Image (cartoon, rainbow, N blue to C red; front, side, top):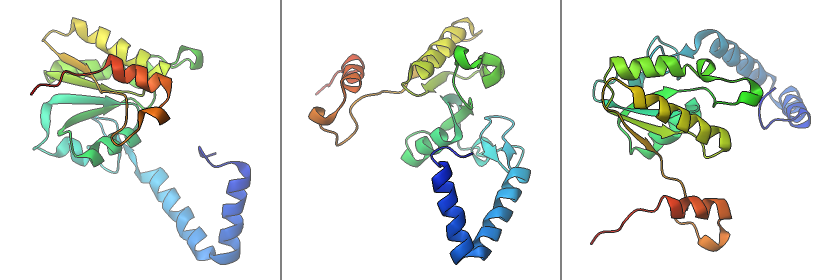
Length: 187
């Protein structure tokens, strides 16, 4: 049922709990049940939370003129861990995928566009993955923002060589993206 956990892995986990710590298994089941009942989506950004609005959306110190669009809550957490962004978010819960019949409405893109217009967001940062679907999602949103009633700066997160990475161990596609997204160095 869970990504990254196959039938054998799940079986090993259950056997471990049965053999060594049944109380932990009961606590885990109780926590999962509570999570499934009590955790919902933030009415603004759509990340998971236990209240109507998440702590990020209720933080008055956040920059309301900037919106970072991510595919999932784990992407939001990764950006928050970096401590380099202080704006608001919108979580798509996926990416456009015509083959899987996932369209803009399934990702609440029309709601996001309405929110951008209502709140007069000035910058939208597209932080979708660099897969074909992530790129298509970013382009779709960027094209939709051309018709915004106010000027919106649209940017895409940089992609390329990771900090501390070595070129000889980096794949060709990553190097190509890094070269296309290069920035000028000024002294």
